[in-house]
Figure 1 (tube, chains in turn red, orange):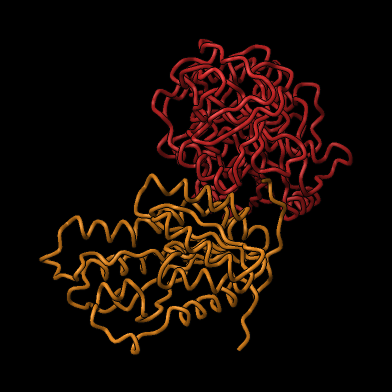
Figure 2: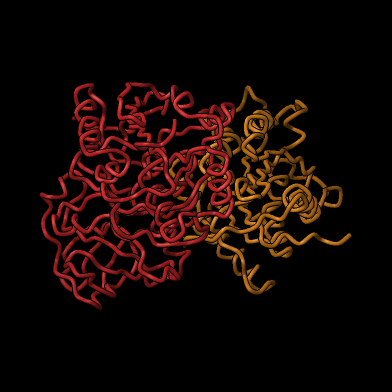
Length: 347
Length: 247
């Protein structure tokens, strides 16, 4: 499987690999999407904008360089200047994460200079490279420094440096995602109009998509980290009315599945407001809200791939991957897409 | 006439440290809106923040340093606006460049001077509005009536000699505003042009140095008119309710 190595210039060029409710596969184009859905269906996207979460810095005590990748928020989310972060040694994304040198050993209380800001290690989160970080500045000062000096997190399979605009979807709003909610790259304003003309509804939630890989097996096993989300009351209402009228809920991206299923875990109904999505979704998960997912193409072994197993049997998902490889679909965040209608959902 | 309160609207204003922009920031804060303003020079941004801090408490103003004419500044500006306000209901594209100073015939205008006028008055508002369409459309889905106000001029309509760079860029902005408003109507985002008239501002002084200030409109008057427009368009139909903010 080839990874997409550059930001696709236009959403219209994406290919769609479709799995229907009975597990049959179809090769489709971006423009076919409205014909795959039905009048009354609701598409839900994650409207998080992507932070420039990769920050170069220095460990003050040792003078050693490091890279900080902001990766999450510590509870109780009431402090804009505190983050969960993964620490890398010297270098940048051009070196594969698994080949990066180890960072200096950090201790609680250590001072860092990060993106021209003063920061402090306030906790070590059960792994030497996973820390809680506090910026010692007012929030507006921190945002300015992040906006000017931070860079989007990226990986070695995309050689050109990404600009912030490469990582924002068309509907990007609040800057809370640590990596792009990349399934949303399939959306443009023309597509939103097409969906509307076909009688489909559109809603958003905001989910702080975390980092997808650290290059450290012990850390990667803990991904995805707990991710805060917020579901507007208007979105929760649209989900209820859609389901009541027999429409389907189509999640644009794995983060949307995570947020909606977490918000509905107790009652089967999506509760509006804030929450913290915990745990992994996989083959054992009984989906209660989401009827279909539109996602990027992700390889076996990733948490993204595992999540797809909640929609169909492992055998069907494995066949999807084989077909995607055979037909040269592009993988990763700037690649093609899969559309999976959940097994057993009435069509 | 009473001033309609604008709490809890979230408003961003470019060119917010001088002329109409500064007056608009003060007017919006006086009506309890939550305001982020953008300007090129840190000294001016800090001075404006200090000035508004003396007048209102608590301060609901955020100053952002950036140049809308620079492509590289747009997303950092947009990020800081949305991070500071937690979303966006109104964007006022007010920052403007006159083109050549003193004003010049088009045949005497350097290409670079025309390009700078277009970058500030047309491409900058296009880029910033595009970068902020996500939060504006989110405001609409949330029950709000988001609005983009593009500051125009009678020079956008009338072909005044020596106003070529400014007039052509403002004419293009006027038409872009009309087309975009039509395209986004179904998404619930409105765009309007406002011609505030000839005002006693630094920009006007550059253009017409010997104008008698007594014959010019005060920026505060134009600011009040724009705030009234925002109030009637955005607030009156239905006050946007706030969804929660994720930091």
